[in-house]
Image (cartoon, rainbow, N blue to C red; front, side):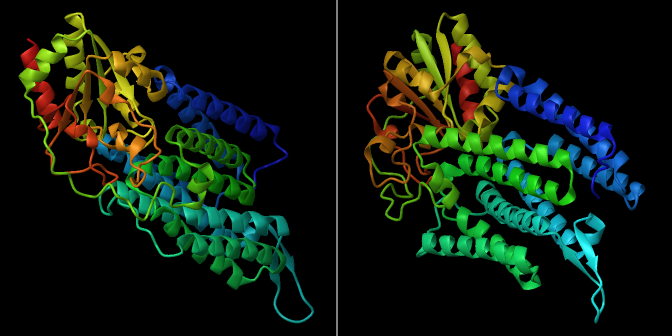
Amino acid sequence: MHEVAANPWVAFAYLVAGVCFILALRGLSSPASSQRGNRLGMVGMTIAVVTTLVTHEIASLPEMLAAIAVGGAIGIVTARRIAMTAMPQLVAAFHSLVGLAAVLVGIAAYLNPMAFGIAELVTPMIGPPFATIHIASRVEMALGVAIGAITFSGSVIAFLKLNGNMGGTPILLPARHAINLAILVAIGLLVALFAQSQAPWAFWTITLLSFAIGFLLIVPIGGADMPVVVSMLNSYSGWAAAAMGFTLGNGAMIITGALVGASGAILSYIMCRAMNRSFVSVIAGGFGAVSDAGGGGTAIDRPWKRGSAEDAAFLMSQAEQVVIVPGYGMAVAQAQHVLREMADRLKAQGVRVKYAIHPVAGRMPGHMNVLLAEANVPYDEVFELEDINGDFAQTDVAFVIGANDVTNPAAKTDKSSPIYGMPVLDVEKARNVLFIKRSMGGVGYAGVDNALFYRDNTMMLLADAKKMVEEIVKALG
């Protein structure tokens, strides 16, 4: 399974693939260059896969090609059918498959180490021959299986939360931090023991404990923090792939895994800073969760103002500046295209239009940016939280379409709230706030009612987001 080290073209091909991956990451840092970045990533992966198939000893090339064809067909069909609203759970599902693949490769290498070239056959004076796995390979194998198992079970929980099979409210277990710490310490000790003794029970215990800790780390995390969870699991999947790259002796896997792991970790750190969360608490699990969440899981019965599409059209047509704040509700309604049409109508009437994007709006990093790019919204009209928050005080209308938790002013004032301390968009500072929501009965993904609904300058537009925006477009003429 190890690559043909004597062939310099293998190293060169993997180097070219690695450069493509680095350029792909650079391209993905901006919406304007993201398509080019995706194409470079595809080229790099094609080079890496073809090089591996050509230069490695493979038991059955037809079977391998058939498996690639089946997997590729499933990927193409899934990508074409998946809705943008389901993209976060699709990403979580992909992460789980990467983690599971790492576990299965590690188990295969442990059961048949000679086929992987990571062991020596020892013939004792008495008894049958047995394989002794190299110590370095034992460490790589154990770490790869551990990280892969954590990634798999954690990604499954993330998928269930994102898909609505589990609630977004944190599930807080008694003494969870002590339990998590004890399991992590036990895994570390078992890895050291396995490296020394190659004991079968140690290997299988590492695997089982790692599956368990992945579950325990993600269950306590609330819905408002799920975008950080997605980026964190992305990092874990990269490190799992890199560890398996060492086991397989494949340079491309090591490079690719390290790039994914490092970029995912950096993204998680950036998002934690944007959300005022501790990066260490992300790794430990249960970040952003409190046991005495006073925000409540039901809407507050307080006076509020209801408006119509005509009211909204009149206010925005008279404004000098309108700031649009998209959220997951826009994604569910698939309203991004008609929203851009509304913005075009306003700009034609001399209104200045901007879009405000919160780092965790939606269910994964960059979710809103992808949706707006799909609707061909100009990149220079889209602003991140730190760049747009100062504009709300000079904004005539803040138009919020399905963004709940990220606009909740309670995050700045209510210490008992699960989202307390998370930076939010200061939409309440605008002269007028138009808030599209299906009904007043529901709450945000974090299970907290939004105090913004009941402010004097807020007008609630209760309807499906797409239908409401279509009515506003008609009213604008």
